[in-house]
Length: 214
Figure (cartoon, one colour):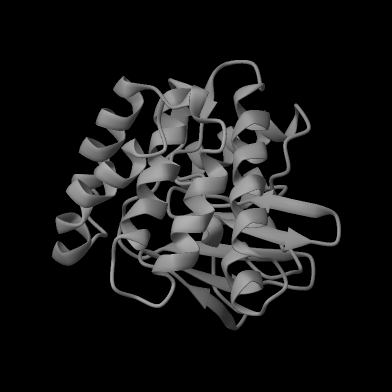
């Protein structure tokens, strides 16, 4: 699809361009994602009422995803602006994981964290389904926990809030399995978008997560 709109966002591997007030184009720069497969998963969970943007499948390609433009900040931006506290962020993530795992077919997101949740007037929406697959819910909980814990054991100012988010996420840790946590750490270590420093935090991140387990 030809890009005609302005760039409105960039991540580690993708750029997002404005199409109009209702739609955006997300383009994969690095070749990691399959937007057609991602669109199919998004439509599948949306059919069961899960809060995910609509997609224009006919306009998608392997690298381009055309989806509904959501109006509102990410949960991470809302936290930074003081619109949501760390506990509420963690509790929201937990609700979104439970709701997703109630969708038939065992869909898991595998990248659900505060920067992939957008807070709109209609409630939270989950974005970035590039890693989604059918799998064990315990792995999904493990991935979200590891992502938060990596930040929590780092030296950035958000480390303390990330620890509070993790505690709220795992207030009921029953869905996080030993197998899920082990596999999540292993997959995270192989993530090509992570820096060496982030990878080196995985051991301490797992240790922190285990302090919340029975």
